[in-house]
Image (cartoon, rainbow, N blue to C red; front, side, top):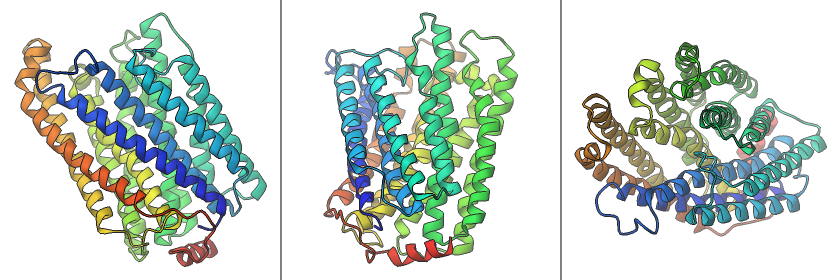
Length: 456
């Protein structure tokens, strides 16, 4: 850790991992409700556990983004953060918002707008926190007088993510209008500007871990950003197919949704070619696993599985089924969960007393999470295919169809449990090492980092 203020990242990572664990509790609880009588039906029904599960995902991933940014920006700008006090105040507000939102969902306090269920007071707090965050990061970069392309892409993604949250503050009585504008936030986050955030972190990690040439990495970033803007924005149309909008959205959504995976292919090639040229000589090979894994699994989950069901002729059958859950789980995990875990794994040896090379527990966590998520994806896929055939083609009722695909939820619970064990190992591996909060130029890995600074 080169700058003392980078230690702020530890607390963001700690909160993120705690919320990640809580998210899995509600996810497993949701899965068990498909298997038979539900003793918690009138206490924690499925609609409540699912809302908490999906919203905790958003909260902890954004918290991880903020922590990773507070680690990366001082390192890239070569200066201390503008204000650690502001960063800690921001974290406190974020935690209070998240905790009170979860408690509110337990008592059915929410807007009912999927993934944007936060009541208006919570949304205002989110906007305030994001403004504090962007101000702190912006002032840090201004103070340093140094803005790298990697930082610029990351900051652009974060700034646009905050801007695109503004439609979520508006309320529409008409359901079609509400759904239309909801995707301006959700789609343009997860299939647009968040990919810029992932690309910024990916470039930073590849430069630090592989010694790759910064100029080459940043050229790849321009390509990825260009593809995100070309395909991602108009690709929003694939969410408009069946909500009452004009028919011209069908070809627009079909064509540009097909182009969306191009950016993800570029990202995977970008990571693989870098490692192939530079080798895996950095001692923190565990961070390399997470970094390259993020790029490859993004191509699978967001790219291949997204393409598999977004064409209008296919989506008219799969829309609103477990096929969507198949794509959503794999895409979110590869693109955003894995890149946050990669940043945590890279920073951990400096933030804590964890050995630079990682631990056996860390590698077990990586492979168990990967295997568990792949198994969950297959479980959702097979259940979804059965659901589409039974409900949409054969005309069975929802509950009759669910009984016939119940075995797939046994598989889902088994693979989800494997995944949860992998996450638990990651959390234990992070917290079992004591934190250190001072700048440590002689900390593990700093020699490699200083060489990277000198060369880039």
